[in-house]
Structures are given as structure tokens and as C-alpha cells.
Amino acid sequence: MNSHQSSAQLLILGAGGHAAVVAESAQRAGFVLVGIASTEAPCVGAPLDTLTFVGDPDGAGASRIDALIRDGVRLIAAVGDASIRARWMTRFGPIAFATIVDPSAVLSPSATLGTGVFIGARAVVQARARILDGAILNTACVVEHDCVIGVCAHISPAAVLCGGVHVGAHAHVGAGAVIIPAMVIGERARIGAGAVVVREVESDTTVMGVPARRSTTS
Image (tube, rainbow, N blue to C red; front, side):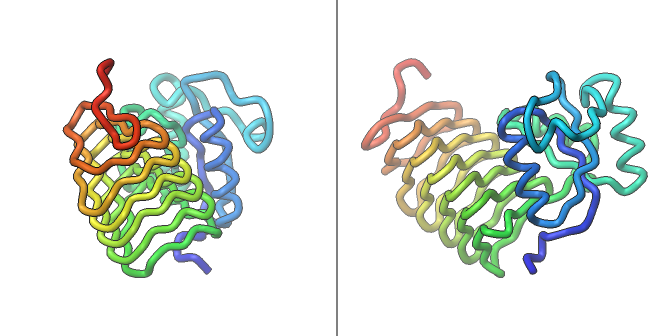
């Protein structure tokens, strides 16, 4: 059994499509879903529409979430916006957050995971990789040996990070992007879908294309 499988009760923070993906991975990993909390209206459709709506984590729902935490319920911030994930992890405390690893993911025994991490279906995390708090490794992405994925960074579906890549906090790597070995991606940087990154990317910049170049609109 994957070491991140669990029978713990779990509250999903978020109510969109990504929340549905996280919820289903959590169920496959053995978590028991007890409800959702969101700044938006509850999502229509399985698996979220059958869950109890707790309220807004930034509003009246916060006190209810605090009570659930005291009762042993774990949380997962299931939204794509890194700033929101970071805010909720600060508000409720990292110790309250579960790390969700889909059972189909391949996780090296020498990789290390922070709290509140989500690793999606068929994702691959190789030797000595470090995944920091609140990061998302989405469906079928590849994080090779010795990579570091920063706090609340997001690696999108089918992206490939070759060995020794460092991705800064709150950065976003788009779907199908490829990053060659030992590159540094700065904090809050954005890598466009399908880009091929062959040089370092500064913080707060957007790059796109093959090879990736800085966007004139960033």
C-alpha cells in the first residue's frame, strides 16, 4: 500500500474541476470524504455534489472548519490558484493538511513530500526529488531525479521536468511543457503549455514556445 493511503476523514477546500479530480484520487487512496468548503457555489456533478457544503473558508465556514480539524478531519486545498492554497494553509495551519497521492502514481522511496501536496494519476516522482508544501503534480507529469518543486507550485498534466530542475514557489508549469536538466524556474514564473525550456526563467515572468522565450505580454 502507498504510504500516503489513508482511512482519514478529509474535507475538500475547493469546488471546481480540480477539486473533483483531487476528491476522486483521495477516495482511491482510501480517504473518507466528509464535505467541501469553497468561496464559490458547490460544484454540480460527482463526486462533490453528494458532499456536505461547509461554507466559505474565508468567511463563515472558517469556524466550522476549525471545529472539524479539532475532531481530526484533514484538509486538502484543491484549487489551482497558488495564492489561495497558500492563504488557506496559513489560515488553518500546515499540520491540518493531508498529502494526497493517487495510487497509480509512481513515487520513489527516496523522494520527500511536504504537507498539502497533491500527486495525480500516473504522475512519476523520481529519486531524491523534493516536493514542498501545497504543490500540485498533476496527471501524468514527470518529475525526475533531484528536482525541487517549490511551495504551492503547480506542474500541469504531462509536463516533463528533467533531472535537477528547481521550480520556485507559486510557479506554474503548463501542460506538456519540457524543462531540460538543471534549469531554475523563478518564483511565480509561468511556463506556457508545450514550451521547451532551455535556459533559466526569472521570477515573475512568462515564457512560451519552442524554445521558450519571454512573452511580450508578461
